[in-house]
Structure formats: C-alpha cells, structure tokens
Image 1 (tube, helix red, strand yellow):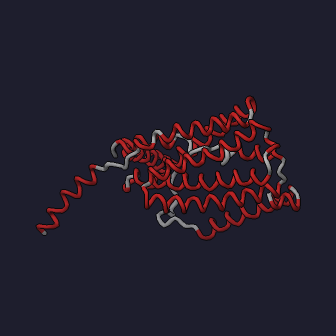
Image 2 (cartoon, rainbow, N blue to C red):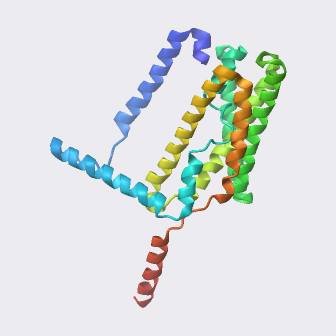
Image 3 (cartoon, helix red, strand yellow):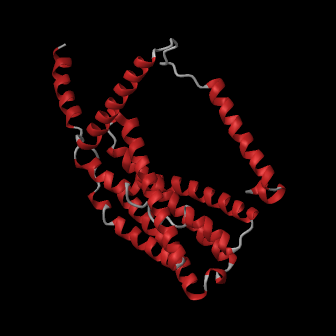
Length: 274
C-alpha cells in the first residue's frame, strides 16, 4: 500500500512479486526434508503412500478430538465461533477504510499501527493469562473487542461514517487491534491446553483451520449485511455475537488423556523393580 500510494500500482505489483521471489528462492535453496526418499517411486507406490497418509491423518484427528475427554470436543465448537468482535479486523475493516475516504498511504499507515498494537496485545494477553488464568483473560479480551466496535457503531448511527473525526477513527481501529491481539493470543493458549502431545501438530493445526473457517463465515455475513443494512448494523451484530461467544468460555476444559495416564502408571513399577 505504501508503494502503491507513492509509485503507483505497477510498482506495487513488482514489489510484491519481488518479495514472493525471495521467499521462493529461500525455500528452494535452504529448506530440506531430512526424511524425504531421494529414490523415485512408481506412481502406484506414491498413490498407495498418499492413501495411507490420509487414512492415518483421519485416525489421528479422530483420536485427538474424540478420545481426549470433553475439552477438545467443546473446543471444536469454540474454534468455529467468532474470535471476539471480528468486523474491525478483516474484510469489513478494509471496505470501511475505503468508504471513509482514506488514501492508500493512510490505509497502509493505519494497518502498520494496527499490527503493532495487535502484537503488543498478544504479549499483554499472554502476561495476563499467566497471572489470572486463560479463560478469564480471553473472556475479558473478547468483551474489550466489542467496546470499540460499539463505539464506532454508535458514531455511525448518529451522523454517518463520514462524521467520525479521523483521530477518533484511528484510535478506534488501533484500540480494537490491541484487544483483538489479546484475544487471539490467549485463545491459542487455550487450544494448546486442549492439544494431545502425541498428535500436537495435527490437532493444533485443525483448531487453527477451524478458526479460519469462523473468520470466513464472519467476512461473508458481514459483507451481505453491510451491503443491505449498512455498517452500523454489522457492528452492532458483531458485538452481540461476541458477547454470546463469551457464554461458552466457562465450559472449556483441557484434554483428558487417559491413555497417557494409564501408560505412566504401568511404567513406574517397572522402573522401580529395575
């Protein structure tokens, strides 16, 4: 956005292509799979291995979510719900900034400030979560994301989007970024507590994937409602849904891996007798 606002769209495309090329070259030159088989496989062998991998993946997902107690099961529902108030974090924010009249360089600057605020929020959320508990902190962070959302909704309802002073507009967006960072970071900590170490990469990635589904659903309905009823209605509904999601948080539990507990209990006597 900075490059586009200063040098034009062609230069912006070239800069993005250059960055992608750097990433590609780094992967090609430095990333190696130590377990990769250097010998060429026949097509039938590759297909058999692919099918076997997918079957194993499905079994791991089933075990991690449905054989680790109620915690991960409730976590599935929580992962598919909005991450606090979403409207001022994703697609709706982009259209609001354009309709507000911000130039490219202003959008880029606001995005930079918002990202820094979100990073600070992630660290602050982790600090608070360690001291006051993850569920309390994530509930607080979710509620806080609703506050700037409601403030902007009220401002738009009173005089329209253009009536919001630019410094207040910036402050609302950056404040939301701070609180959203808190919510996002601590939420991931909750999912880590639900994740079975035996299949940690698979299960945690699945939780994150479900979160992306929730974001996509939010972007879709917010776009439809904004086009038909306006931004204020979107923001009011977004804050309402956020409060409803908070009601699920008290029911969240960590995993209950009985298999690991039983295994540990059988190993200890053997070590003692040895």
